[in-house]
Length: 198
Image 1 (cartoon, rainbow, N blue to C red):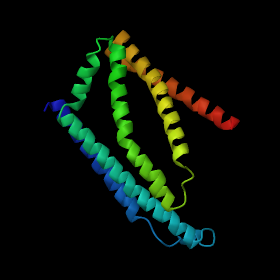
Image 2 (image 1 turned 90 degrees about the horizontal axis):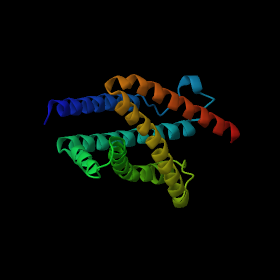
Image 3 (image 1 turned 90 degrees about the vertical axis):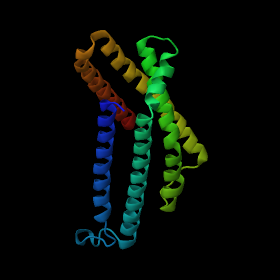
């Protein structure tokens, strides 16, 4: 294992521990009774339901985070990302397209790993508390639309970043920051316009 890999794994573990500590504090702070400040405004039943959902959803988030973290660490330890890189380079394309293929494969694997968690959250967790408004058809439709949107936007952003680095080398990170900032501002603007229209 290289020093870089060891440092990266240590960073992931540290991040996970901090995240778990914060979530544990959040769970410990939950109370079944309505705080005095909200007595008469929020009834006990609704409050208990909200607290129950928050507790269960936080536990679910912890499990999901740990699972993805462990998978990522194992992938680093066993050189999985290196194998993806070799596979992407096997197409013998230019560096930008090779980078798009590399991250595209990782994105696809990530989506497949997260799919069972999304299904559980919608059809088990949210269904338990009466928050689920989806059926199988709407879930599949939303998943496909989200999947396509992430591919399009991600490809545009990644293409820009890879092009800048290829064109300007390491100093291009400043231009990458500017590009990503402008890209994000445009997305926020479009989202606001779309929300206003709706």
